[in-house]
Amino acid sequence: MKAAIISDIHSNLEALQAVIKDIKKRRIKRILCLGDLVGYGANPDECIELCMRETKIIVAGNHDWAAIGKTDISVFNPVAAEAIRWTQKNISKKNFNRLNKLELIETVDSILLVHASPQKPEQWDYLFTLDEFKRQFEFFKTQVCFVGHSHIPSVVFQEANGYTDFLRDNPFPLIDNRKYIINIGSVGQPRDLDPRASYAIYDGNNKSIDIIRLDYNIPLAQQKIIDAGLPEVLADRLLAGR
Ligand SMILES: [Fe+2]
Image (cartoon, rainbow, N blue to C red):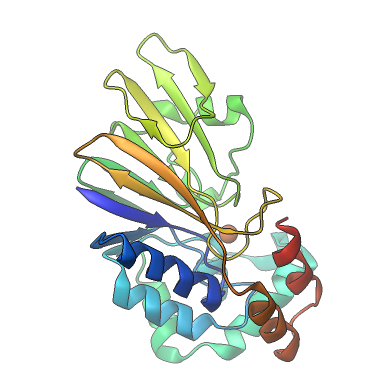
């Protein structure tokens, strides 16, 4: 199987359109999505609809659950919570129901897809440090687990003897006796100081992964956020990539 994996779109239609166009240009037929379709940006309905049309599988993210009242937004920072309240007022009933149907975890062709962590997907734990990644390996049996959530692309591997480390290469081969947790970064709100949209290409035949970065129309996405009356800081951070 060859597939593109996308995550954390966050209602950023300009970034999503650019990523899907790039995937199609590469003739990749299958797109899998790790959730957070909404929250932060100005086009929730459009992003839900485009994702539903173009992707094979979508798992739920914490902002998707928050938008439909399944996750308590009192734990969100004030700006994220405000964006969720705005989203709740601005998505259609049909799209509300679509978000409500998303599963938390899916397996396809021996890869695991989950928004936050395989251990407890519903707790939305963040994986930043090596120890945080390391703890997760016993909770999945597939060779590869794709995650999103932190908006920071990162790859951690574990060897059969338990040795675990970050992998800095990109693209990189999947080595048979290693397991991998791969954070593919964010389409719509990157936070690694690189404002370009991020997604991954998984090539199961050639056993390789490539994390792609892509320019998109940031000024337009920013203007829409301001015009929608969403917090201006959400526009600023798109250009800052954090
Ligand atoms: Fe997110």
